[in-house]
Every structure is written in structure tokens, then in C-alpha cells.
Image 1 (cartoon, rainbow, N blue to C red):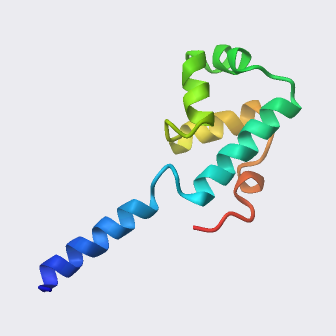
Image 2: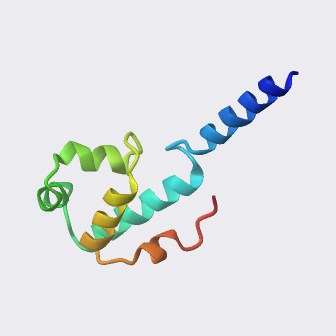
Length: 92
């Protein structure tokens, strides 16, 4: 394998680790969903407070859509949890 081919393979492997189906990402989403349910918030209520459609919340919770950092912060604020607590114990 050439050096360029090796580097390309490394980049592909790195990008695959960022998948929305990565176990660490899925653990974060499960924690967010659990917290929403603990607060007795429906997906509709979350969507209304964030100014998004209910389907957005559903796609996030089913890992069809990946959260960006700002969206994660917004959910943490809404769910009254610290970002550090959400991330605690998650491995990269």
C-alpha cells in the first residue's frame, strides 16, 4: 500500500468512528431521552420550546439525525443538566 493509500484508509477509519451509530454517541442520546421522560416532557413540548418540529426531536432520539454542539447545549439547558454530566463516562 502506498503512503497516500495508507493515509486515505486512516481518514476513512477516523470518519467512521464519528458515526451517529457510535456507541458513545448513542449513550448520550439515551441519556437525553431518559432525562426528557424523567421531566415528563413530550417530544412535542421539547420541539415547541426549541422552535423545531417534533420530527426533529424524534430523529435525534432515534439516531437518524446527529446533534451538533449548540443543539446539545440547548437540550442540556432545557433538561436542566450540565453538559459535563451528560458526557461523564462516555469514551471517545
